Length: 289
Image 1 (cartoon, rainbow, N blue to C red):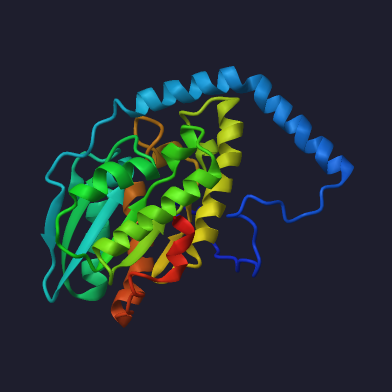
Image 2: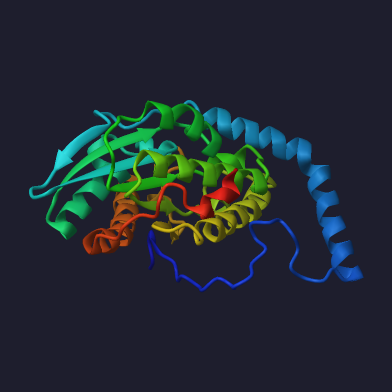
């Protein structure tokens, strides 16, 4: 049975409208009625959905990060500097110690694959979305330039009922700011998990979140596809109870190890090849302004 594993990467269409918010299909009368009915259902359930989403975020903000300093060094060889930045996964929620968290395992796997010393730094903020990470976390990063960056945001944007177009803008701005900090870094964006499979979510929030998380992940994948040296790393998992920590929202320690293996596997090939990053004034960042 599959655990946290890399999903098949389907080629994106040449002219996708995912990130623009425009409909690429012709709206027939039947399709229009279907959309209107769907929105009426969502609006009628909104008080319940909002209440459940608020309670879930309040629960999430009570979580604690993994124990241990948010930085370290592992392995031998030529030093490579790794930054992990984003939400509670980066903070190590679901693991007892930071060494057993996703970030700690990513550093360990990368060291083994590249035969290099990995100097890692974790900058995670529980409950933070893309805008808050950009506003509160990026400005206080160490001045050290990084060779690789793991980025995890989006789940809290979904739970805050953020608009997908706004999330896209903030994500691209965040990536632009990270590129300004570390121009040569390879950036790996961790794709959004299927939240509707998480034990903590109840109906009807589960239905709405399931639809929104797939939409947000598609928005992120399409937006980042156009940015050099940035990759979308898709992940999914089998919703078994042992795949989750006690909070029902975060992967367990074994799951975090599996997730880290996916992330390290995606990041190490371009690092081994020594790909160069684009200039900081690359016009493809203009969409974030």
